[in-house]
Image (cartoon, rainbow, N blue to C red):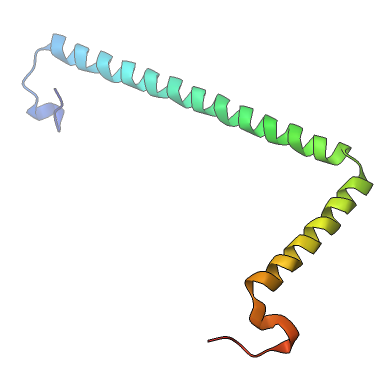
Length: 93
């Protein structure tokens, strides 16, 4: 049972103790859940860091080639998605 204030609670001392124990157990469970979510977050961060290291270790030449290819693809997509910008045309309606 939940009570808004201790003065309104008509319980015996034993029931108060049970309420305190229930609150303590809930607090402990919440802390455990927090620890689990922190471990999951740490795992995600570690995986991201490993991926970053792999990309950096893949070599500067390969990274440059990927950048050039990406730029070419993106500029082509821009031309396809916004044809009114080609050849200095006016804005489409």
